[in-house]
Length: 406
Ligand SMILES: *Cc1c(COP(=O)(O)O)cnc(C)c1O
Image 1 (cartoon, rainbow, N blue to C red):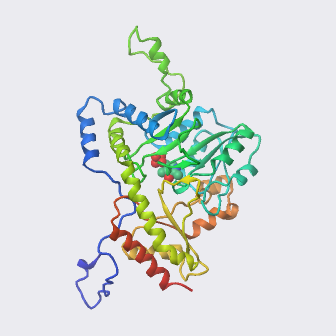
Image 2: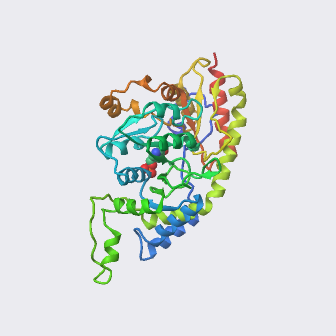
Image 3: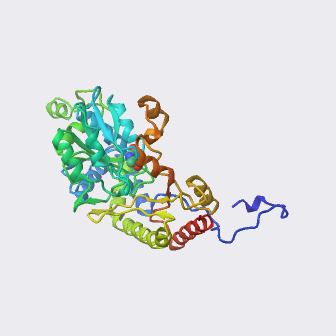
């Protein structure tokens, strides 16, 4: 990698011919000529912000998951925030979510003035554990935000039963879960609010973007919340008198999707079958490639429960520190030296200084999430991986694990 700078051969390290010559990125977007052409077409049209492409993208996305309706937004975070605000959740309310998620699943709870209550995860899927959720319900609880971690759907039957029993809203953070299904129903195919992410690293990307699916009447209200609080009814009422008039019925946000982003999304939707097929091939290769190391108890592989369709957004290994001389951080350094990018999903919410200090969380308050975090590493998983890249990743993991086994 730095070879050109090493002019003094007496101090140059012996090049390791096992190391691939180029750095393998973690999750570059899969954007091709069709996406580029559609964005150019959008730029050349009269609509570059929310317009016909955004509407078509929302309609097509809703159809693809069998959603009653869909609202296109500029992020998944916006979708979660708008869902909570539209439900009227605020000060004095509690919302239960998982520590094993990106910070925004919890940040939005703080944004509406409510209190985030964390419940630990299941040891295999790392999804919100229904038993832990049930233990944390109080008279103030208003909603549960489930996250479909890595693209593996959470146990929605059990979570919905708890929500129904206590009159709570069930909101799904489906940032990883397009396309995925739980017991045959696509994620986003129900009437409860489900937020998807089209961030640059996600399975379907619009650069930045999101979609909120759910009940049509709920989403009509969410649309007002998401766009300055401007009432659509006001438009209808004053249509004859002049289209310039609108009523602001609440202090809403500015969360609309642009037609430039929707242009990307429309093409990505069409390519989704091919993109997901390649992801699945990579997963199959990883599973086969690491089976032996897993059987020897040197690492743990992700699980796939038989009643779900997995979106495979992430491939997360867990090391077995009791069987290895190195920990996760040294493993990541070794992978970087092998020219392979990795990541960690996630630093649990309760470890971040804001949450730790404001809510007084200790690392072992959520022992399953904390243990998983301490030994997890996400490998590159995206449709642009060539077979040789996948083989390089498998070989690098083997070399590092075998060199450090106890
Ligand atoms: C990426 C991600 C988000 C945020 O998505 P944005 O579209 O960037 O707002 C939320 N939750 C999880 C679990 C994520 O991975």
